[in-house]
Length: 386
Ligand code: PMP
Image 1: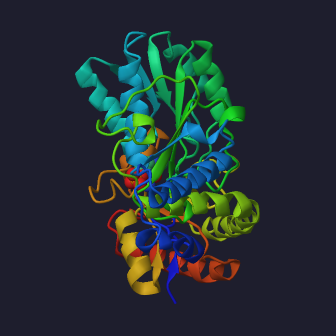
Image 2: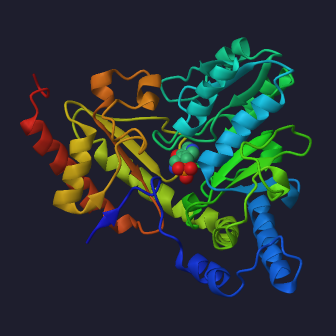
């Protein structure tokens, strides 16, 4: 029986969510901008979804939520839109060294418009260096982006402390919460967040939809221009099925997060315990400040790609080897390099991300498969033991 342990790359849509949202494909299909009754019903579905997403992150009110076509687009609006809208205040932007590529690349792109982009270092567990941040952030830094948690090493960032430093200079903080949503209790008001990115599929909702929280009073602007949908921040006719689905996903996540995360945390700890018994294995990221669903390792002398393929072909277990976006390039992950691993160490990485289909009973089979995979690859490796 296959065991899927790559929930950070993709989740199945929860059948309850598919059932909830499907009628919007065939019956309640109206355009939310139409003034007739079919349009008004569609508008109601979008606004219900907005309220659910706002509740998940304890936002001031539903009007702070903008639906987008995914997390990449939300990150682009947060970064490009905010930097460009506020350029008269300064032309500096900062991001932690372990951000997702959909944060790093828009920041790099801003350099073409004359912005200065620098990365904030992290320690060996991936925790943002607050004193370095304090030295880097100035009045001219219009935007700083630090993720809530990192999917590749599981580390949870000290967001409130980051917020205090950023706000001490009067600047804006953007947080990519894709890895953390539905797993940690995100509270944008408590945590001092100005802009926050969410994705639907990371909480078992449909793909192709995400959301950006924009705190009241924050000045930003759209990246795409067109109609006035989503207060003009994200023009284009709303994808009703996807938005209704994301709303229901947020609703279920709000209700079920606590019990589900307690269940998965126990499984994560069991996996970490048995896998670290393998010789020359190490946990990556923080042991304590860690996502409840995430267990990531490096194994000396072998390649992550070979681990992934062997685990899949021989044992029917799907895992990841670092960021899905760079795993095709065979370049070592920028996250693992940023926490101080050498190139050859970073190559031997395996990432397990747990979700709804996983149970504690799967732990012995997974542990056995990892042990056999590592032994087998090391026996073939010209690098190991030499
Ligand atoms: N941020 C993070 C932390 C991610 O892991 C991802 C990829 N799932 C994204 C942003 C981009 O998400 P999407 O590809 O759905 O736009």
